Image (cartoon, one colour):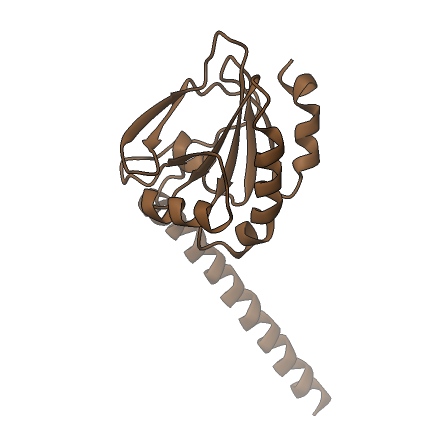
Length: 185
């Protein structure tokens, strides 16, 4: 009886092992199909990358190009948000105070950026009293760098005057912007 019980557990273990091997073979065989048919992510913008300009729509829906390469040594800070993001709501009032305090600095251009429609972006900014330039990257043709820049919200993105990405941080980390002179050099 003991021999039969150990033989049954051996058969069970062998069956599980064979099923595991078959499952792995199916996964490996299916990988090329899933890789070929999955959407390719936009080109992620990393610290050190250069973005010469952003093309989007202002609050009224007019197409707008914002050059990030600026011969006047002006840094650009993007405040990335989305009206439907609860996390954006959590930082919106802090951003409002930050916008009010920072409007006098001629060396920093501040732009609130979203992947939502221009009208929704304008309503959101008005709701929180933001006095800042708005840019919507909500066009279906926007991919790659534009999609990468708006993929995380709320998010801070800092470019120097040469259009080089110098900092990415969570939107609640406004204190990092106090280091702008060192960041953009």
